[in-house]
Figure 1: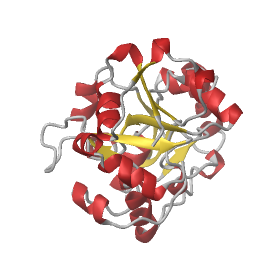
Figure 2: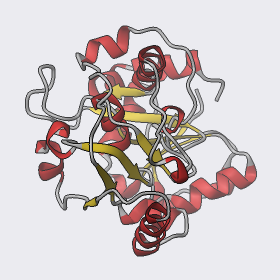
Figure 3: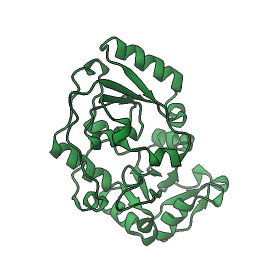
Figure 4: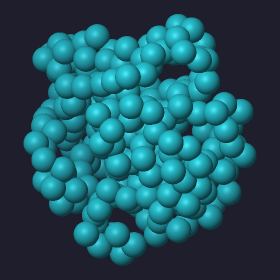
Length: 267
């Protein structure tokens, strides 16, 4: 394995876990030079946007790390909602296509799919974080204004806005069933709320080029009154796929994450 694990200021604990579990030493981002090799990169956080976009332009392989999709909220398997799970995505920011995977990792999470929520009234607009907006060259205000204007052309339902909570503590303690009460559909850019909503049984519309919930979401806001919702089998296959794209901190350190990635991807 010749992956280069880029460690910003030598203080990214998750990069260090993944590197050491893979039998490698992390490389200090500040002294590293892109041109020194063509080996695949491992980097964490969307603010590495210049490196990510250069890799895309040069067709250089990379693994992108960030917060996992599932399992980081308080639950029976993670009572305190610790940030145990981290997604690792080959050559992209999120896993936005579904590949058939076994069910074992999804079942381990102990998360239950809720049935489709029908006959609800409101549209919930979930504001994106500024970081992905910056990455894709838009502003939060632009997205909010354009999206609301488009929705009003196709529905007269109340449009509620959910701002992103300022702290992770606030985010992890909010229960999806509370903010999804009486919600006809969720509309977002690329928020993780899309994933939570699909699991909770609420139809989703996403507008970002890349989102983990995209395969089970609507893309056309003109269909807001008649949203499509995936079947139970489609949701299950999607959830199994996402569970194989994220790893517990113990799996980063043990080398299992690297092993699974090498077995399931060609990077």
